[in-house]
Length: 255
Image 1 (cartoon, rainbow, N blue to C red):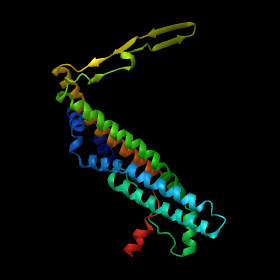
Image 2: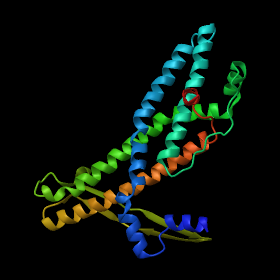
Image 3: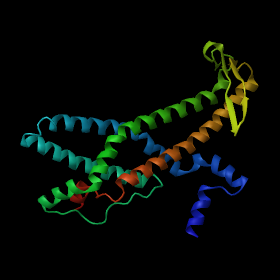
């Protein structure tokens, strides 16, 4: 029964439910939690990248000395703290359940260090933290692009008489002729569909309103893309960080 109810929440079963699901997306609190989660991806990715580069640049050359080993060991614990933070962030802001490990790591220093170095989640956490920069750039580009296109299209009626508003292909025209070939033994059938795109201006109120309506539709669709991206990133976090240790700093503060 639970699985059926969960499936019905994702897949509308009637046109009315589909309408409410699509246009009700800005009314859901989870949409803004997902948006916040994605908005944090780029700045956090930059911070993580700077921390990793600095740690490796300092600890790597000095690894032959004791201070280099200490720096790299400190980096291991810092990565584990970042991973714990990212796991908790995804668990709270997305719809994906990213559980922490129930058992506590050894409190004795030698055992704790051995646990940190041999725990698989330490190294999957390192992969996650290192990949956060690239993921953050991708998410940032997606958010900016969707916001810009939605806003520009929606506001076209405010300035539709401007001759600079329109679609301008390079050279004024684009021609494209895709060909589909079907082969069956010795027979071959080819279907070519010529397509041609020319410069198009928004020069009437009707065209401007149509473009604006498309912009509004694109804004709603963009919010659904936000939810999908947050869900995918949440699952990526679950795969790499699910079952990792809780934050050692938080455990220390809680006593």
